[in-house]
Length: 162
Image 1 (tube, rainbow, N blue to C red):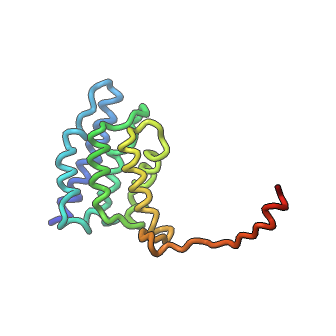
Image 2: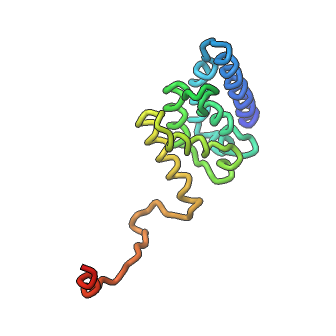
Image 3: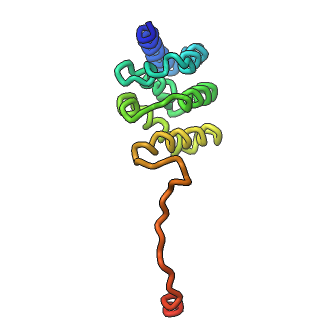
């Protein structure tokens, strides 16, 4: 049941992104993604569907990527879309396989490097990127377990170079 509902939502989200692109090309307002946003956020926030939402086979995150991608003319999606989807993404346990299958990491990297997103959105993207890359780089988020490199200090070498 959950997989069928998520698959249906993925198809509808992809269609809404395509319809918005067509509307923008024709000079009309692109409202399809904005109209779907409450429904998408509601689905992403359901705790009982967490494993299905991040499943690389179903690939709902790819449709989320389509919602967050810059539009054809280079403009960013509506602020509401950016804020709500990034907030929902922060709650999901996204693993490396889901990141690779969906390609959503590339869009988040764009938000961290671009000057166009607002400061709050940029901070959210930076937090997501740090959270997602930590397990890939095999780093711990527990700072008490961090290992620091130590070096010997010899004052004789300092006076030699001065």
